[in-house]
Image 1 (cartoon, rainbow, N blue to C red):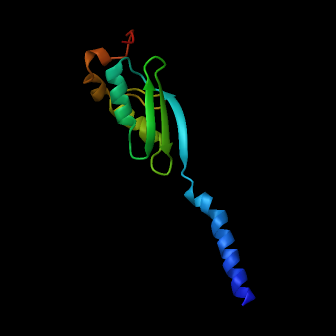
Image 2: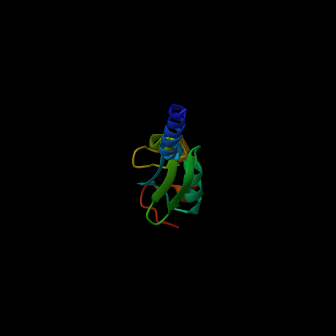
Image 3: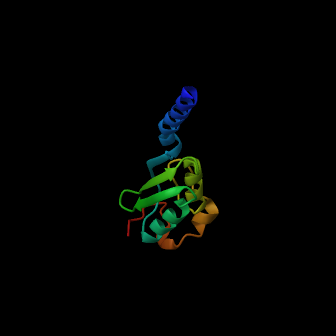
Length: 117
């Protein structure tokens, strides 16, 4: 009888100790540079970054820094960079897709000496 009680108590203890480890998400926050010049760029960049597993993302037009909060179990940082590049915007790790870049509105053509607007 005491053995059964001990096993039940021990199992309960193990469950409570390991519960937080299983409940934790691998939520990470990262920041990286993404080329762009205007509010249309902001919308396009943030939409491209919003993949499954993204909790929050925000691009700052003045600093060209994208802040992303994401679950690393669901999406990789490389996938985020590639999605943004596929939308026509260059990141620290990925060149912009040339076809997508050529289709950007003229005001969004960030290559060259373009001012923020």
